[in-house]
Amino acid sequence: MRSLLATTLALMFLGAASTAHAQTCGEGAGGFGRWLESFKKRATAEGVSRRAIASALSGVTYDPRIIRLDRNQRSFKLSFEQFYARRVGTALISRARARLKTHRATFDRVERQFGVPREIVVSIWGLETNFGADTSGKYSIIRSLATLAYDCRRSGFFTGQLIDAVRIVDQGHMSPAEMRGGWAGEIGQTQFLPTPYVRYAVDFDGDGRKDLIRSVPDILASTANFLKGHGWQPGQPWGPGTHNYNVIRDWNRAQVYQRTIAIMASKLAGH
Image (cartoon, rainbow, N blue to C red; front, side):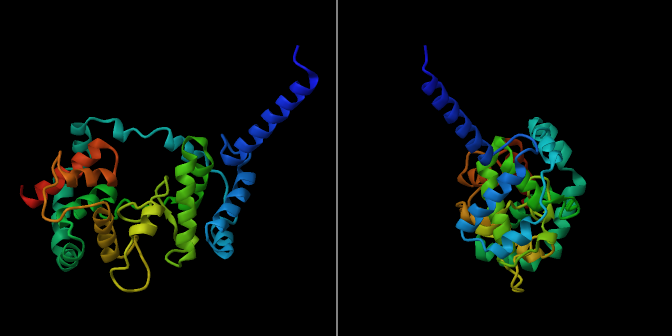
């Protein structure tokens, strides 16, 4: 028979493992507060100021709505034909052409500096938020990311996103109150997550802030800079099987989305 000491040690080990797991992630609201305090220490260790941490995370609570949305992403389960028909129509194409005319000078600058065709950038802009019309700011980005970082399904990924969200506050580009966007923490009119924001967002209008909510120059340049940073080859095609098509994949991993961007851009370019 197993000795009492061995049994006791095993139970102590299991209890310690359970506690460690609870500190790393969790299911449901229980333990969220303890996890958040642990997260604050990690953010401090990664160089985020205590002032920004206190400002961004004060009063943040678990949001069960975000978990329900995370478990129910239906649009990417559609076929390409269904997805394209739902997301792209003559109205979106017309609005894209209008934006290309209205912001021609900015698109000229973006193409010269980053080497990414305007048709690709404007397609992403239109598909993500209908050129800003669908950016409701319904969700607190900080609260959404904290909920997803605590949830065990993709805790590691969203913990990094949350640290960078607080870093954006620390750098003075957005206040916690301004950080409202998509349910999964997307920021602005082309839906940057915080880590790509930190790496690729550009102050293209020269006002000292990287504003992906209101500044069209910043929005377009940042989107192009993301693609450039992932290896976009200027002057090369972007259809399926090409290097640039693989770069589009880095923007969005859903195959239907990649193909929709490429085909919409080709239509706008007259290919």
